[in-house]
Amino acid sequence: MRLARPAAAAAGSALLAAAVSGAGAVAPAVAPPAGSLAAIVAIRPGIVHALGAQPLPPTTAFCEKKFKIACYLPKQIQRAYHLPALFRKGVDGKGQTIVIVDSYGSPTVRRDLRVFDAASGIPAPPSLRVIQPAGKVAAYRPTSNRAGWAGETDLDVEYAHTMAPGARILLVETPTSENEGTTGFPAIVRAEEYVISHHLGGVISQSFGATEQTFPSRKSLTDLRGAYIDAARGGVTVLAASGDSGAADVKFNQFTYYLHPVTSWPDSDPLVTGVGGTRLHLTATGRHTRPDTVWNDTFNAAANKFIAGDKGPNPLAGGGGKSVIFGRPSYQNGVRSVVGASRGVPDISMSGACNGAADMYQSFKGQAAGWYPSCGTSEATPEFAGIVAMADQVAGRPLGLINPFLYRMSAQHLPGIVDVVTGNNTVSFRQGGKLHTVQGFRARPGYDLASGVGTVNALLFVYELAKAAGHH
Image (cartoon, rainbow, N blue to C red):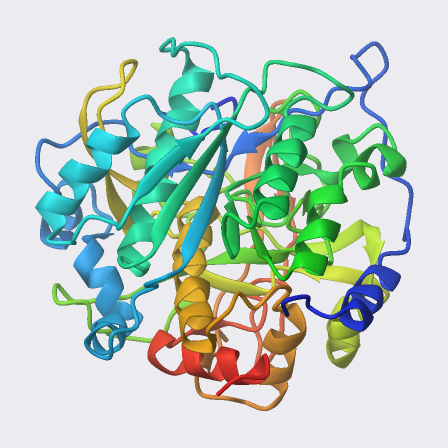
């Protein structure tokens, strides 16, 4: 498959007000091209995965030999973030619910998770519940769009569960074929508002986004913020993937790239934690051979061939940059030298590289059943959701909007936040017969627009985050 575009309890009203007050417009959104359906904005899943299925979970050695890129098993990723030591302490997300929101969902998600768990030696979750609060999802048909979302759903569920095996999983599926102003988003807002008002989970994971400039107007985007405002007031953490096209992203038609740096929403929302991508460098047992770097496979010919079927360059990098919709929120005042007057993303990063892909399993119709090394910030986001669920467990309650805590922890150089200081999200691509480069941002000590505050050592981070939120 090619790039999958259509291939706290209460963070405190003062905290909420401070975050929202930073959400002033910096510049108007750019309208879609003349003649388009101006009110439609297409959301897309962030999953990127391989061209072919494998019958067994591929090992790092297998992927390196066959594909010339690394891939990792779930246990390696657990070890990379020091999770086994947490599990031994009884910290595995027990008592928490991770909410995963995806358009359409996957018709085989229960079976796929069972196969994934059995092969990976991970216990089944206490529960995997599927709801459709915004309306019934049409019967599955193996179109590229539905298969893309089904793969996204399986990846989200499998890797949230990998990170926090003791947490309950609530999969929220939405019917996106409707159009009420912006395709897909109104249903997602309704579904999330249902989850929040019924107190169904403490952390919401969203592995999708749309380029800010594709919204018809600033108001058409801000009118969709209701769920995030409710979440911040209700003490629910909301995460969103920062995208897989580096500093670039696609226009309204979903295949033409902007030729200047852009960001996507909802990760750019001040009330959402934007999750970027890193590259892990691991041994067969999951030990680091070198520090994590910013994910950027744009210029890696083997990764391009594996994902896109050509030598590239194709934009394959973690999203990051400055919002044109939202001004700098108060919690980013300490990094104003980096973000200027704008909201900067991402906030934090987790494993998302294609050269270092995560093995996932799927069996829905439309693609061969089997194991697919997969990558993207849609891998990173559910991974971080699992980490947040464990911090919630330690704190004894959901932590709500965590961004102020992340920036405070970073400023204090707490060891649970691991700075990422190598790499960038500059991308190149051929378009209109020309090779274009969109200059991105470099990793540097402290906060940057390629990795956020960095990544995590979960063994330390979950306790530090719980403490930063006011609980030991």
